[in-house]
Length: 213
Image (cartoon, rainbow, N blue to C red; front, side, top):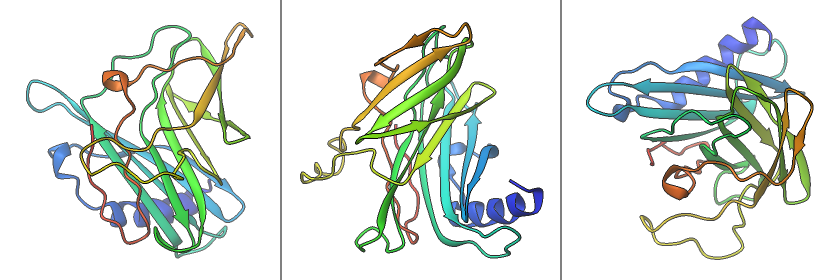
C-alpha cells in the first residue's frame, strides 16, 4: 500500500468502525494493509489492559480504493473482541476473528461474498495456507500476526442461523502450516477460544460493529 492510499483507507475504516467502548479507550493500530487491484483490506488490532483481564479487539475492513483515490467505496467492516488467547506454541497458530461480508449489495443484497480472517502464529511458522470451499488462500504474516482475505466464503450459510446468543455458523476452513525449516504440516488444528471460534460479526456497509468473545 502506498502511504497516501493507506492514510485514506485507514481514515475511512476508523470512521465506519467508530468508538469501541469495550476497549476502554485503548487505541487501535494498523497491523496489515494490502491491495489487490482496486480492492484494499486492512487489519487493526488493540488490547485493553484495564482491570484484571485484558480485552483484545480485531477490526477488519475491505473496500474499493483505486490507486491514488480519495474516497473509499463499498466499505465493509467487521469487529470482534474477547479475552484473548495465550501466544501459540511452536508450530501452532490461533484461529482468531472471522468475518464474511457481502460486497456490492449489503447483507441482504445480491453482492458477492468476501471473507477475512486473522490470528496469531508461533515463532517458527513461516507460512499459513487456508483451504476454503475449494480455494487455496495464502495468509500474510507480520510480527506474529496473520491475516487473509479472499472473494468467497468462510462459513456454510446454507442452513438457518442459530438464535442470537446461541452461537454462530461453523467455519469451513482447513489449514496447512509451513515451518521455518521448510517442513509442511497439513490439516493442522488451530487453538481456539474456549474450544470454539471467536464470535464473528458479519457487517454490510451500514452495520454498526459490536463485540464478541
